[in-house]
Image (cartoon, rainbow, N blue to C red; front, side, top):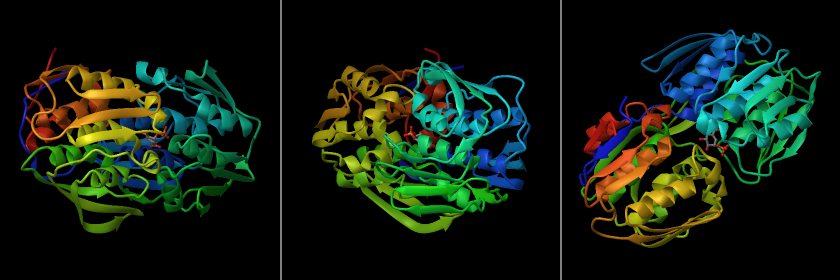
Length: 439
Ligand code: S3P
């Protein structure tokens, strides 16, 4: 299998493309579909390795799932108490969302289970989820706070009133899923808004939630009713093209059917603050999620201090934001983004190393980065970088080639398929000269 991208410098992005389905919604469509009574039909499902991991975990838990075929999946729900104890460890692959949400969901089962993941996932912190679940009565064992995670059957779970210490949709979602199995009410307060797909989708499955401001409440013991789910294109995958078209002169690109949930659109706000020309066309609502076509044309970007309130709303998009910042006029400062250090890689360290290897003046800080933008002309020197097996790092450096002075070699790209299967082909169609190679 090729494990590197060779990307030739220059080019512009034009035409109309649709990036694959939203990863967060795809994971949840399987999980909630499995717990529902009846058949849930999903279209636009992300056929990437992460969502497929979730699918295989639920198959191992006794759920029949047909597909995916051309983005269509049918989940034959077994009801909240219909999962079967697995006969082997449940492999979440590279998917942090799968593991963390499953911890909440499995905490309420009458059987024991073990969650495992790949090398990157095995380094990621799980205490943040185990801690509130244990307060609810769950029995969870980790390897010093990291996977593998063993979940033992609890005598019972009880609702808690939980103030989340960090802005994390995964922690919030895990506690909500455990709350379905808890006696009484589970209340969660978030320190800042994070993606609310779990809340929207639970409501779509007929679960009653109370939502006021930063607080969400759920009474345990409710059942889910099967529904149909149309997964919008992932704004986190669109982000590479939003940045690419902004930085490459002469670009005019339309990204179709992009999910525009306000808890996910921080990237559009950040790029607009930098001077990007992004127009939301034909805004509409699809299955409880706002969607639009995004037209993006090249623009002169300027450096900014990224407002901290936008950080959780663009948390997965910072590798691409750093590339935009390198191409902007003046300094960009990112703060309040320490969560980037515990993603699929340490995205502050890995991006700073890569940017510096390509000649950019980038200084990592404990909670962000300072980047001196180069403005006009080629920004990145020819050279090579490694993604440290992080899909979003690999794709961010791919778009950097649009403003490079020579070819870029990006190593360790196999994981791009976790979130964006078909990325090289789609990038090529939009105007990037990319080849997959063995290196
Ligand atoms: C996700 C939440 C975010 C995000 C991840 C997907 C989700 O993680 O980075 O890619 O689907 O709930 P955190 O909750 O750890 O911030």
